Length: 115
Image 1 (tube, rainbow, N blue to C red):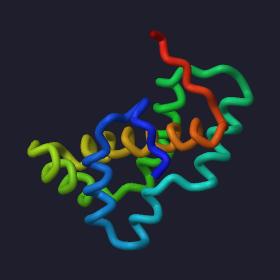
Image 2 (cartoon, one colour):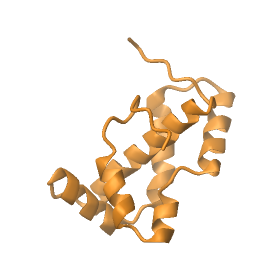
Image 3 (cartoon, rainbow, N blue to C red):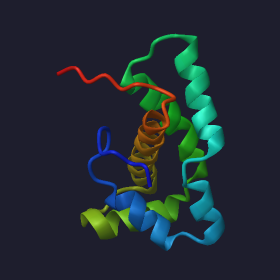
Image 4 (cartoon, rainbow, N blue to C red):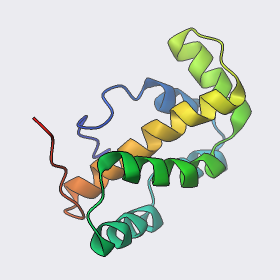
């Protein structure tokens, strides 16, 4: 999995999404070599803050998530009723964090914590 927990501590909603998704949708919701190459390009252009990387990646991966499955996954795991848009945002955040954690483990970027 290569997730370190440095950015996202709880992947339950994303894990539930992956369990509920069809094979094709599941593959779209996994970190890819394209994602990692995109991160590499971003971080070599100029220094970026973590929130900038997260927002950029979230906006890209949101398009790959199924809104209905996202809503059902969040509802089941977190026991809250949110709109499909909010659920996609939540799962996209987990996926973006996972991509960045994988990128760090592979030496593509170095996360510096403020503490």
